[in-house]
Each structure stands twice: as structure tokens, then as C-alpha cells.
Image (tube, rainbow, N blue to C red; front, side, top):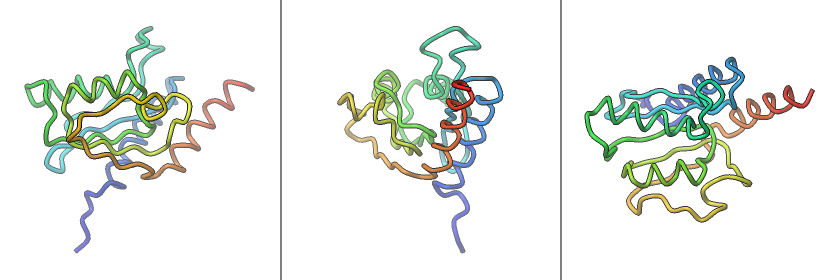
Length: 147
């Protein structure tokens, strides 16, 4: 029997969060954090709503997940995020000691890899899961901003 709780399943949930951000006129980035095949946190960008440049989806998700488990370390957790984390978010992920980061679309201008920001040495990274769907959502957002 096929495992229904795979990377694609959880990335679809993160894309649903990105869609919520889009509906709020936020850059459409969404996150879910998973422990033991259960979503313990959902988040999306809130930088405009909170007038806070640090209110990225990943930061909101880390806080929600830490509250859900009652601790600051996210060992044993996986983050599914629709866009490669920036350096700020990568730094927070480093300190959270999250076990796994799965992201959809690359961010060649602002992504953590472009800037050489490390994740925790024990963090596994998977990229490209549903990248095209995430990229399309981002392109639509920025196209509407330009029009």
C-alpha cells in the first residue's frame, strides 16, 4: 500500500497555506511542519499584515511548532515550505535543529544557498517537490503586482 503521507501530500498542504497568503496580498509562501506524520503547525507569510519584515512563513511556522510541542528544538520534525528559505529563516531553522527541510521552488536571488547560510549539520534537505506549482503561484502574484 502506498504511503499517503509523503512529501507531495504535505507540500500540497503548504501550497494551500501559500494560497491563503496570496488571498491576503502577501507573497505566497506557505509552510507546514510535521511530526510523526501529523501537521503540528501551519503558517504563511504575514509581513504585510503584521508590518514585520521577520514575519516570513518559516518564522511563523517555527514559533507555532515550538508552541505545539512545548519546546524550542524541532528535532524529529520536517518543514515543508513552498520557496527556498532566505538566510534569516535558514538561521532560525539552524537554531531550531529541525531534522528535515523540504522546499518546492528555488530562490536563486534570496535563497539561503545563494548566500552560503548553513542549516544545522544534521538537517536533511530535499528540494524541488512541487516546484512548478509553487513557481506558478509566485509568478502570478508578482505579475499582478506589475499590472
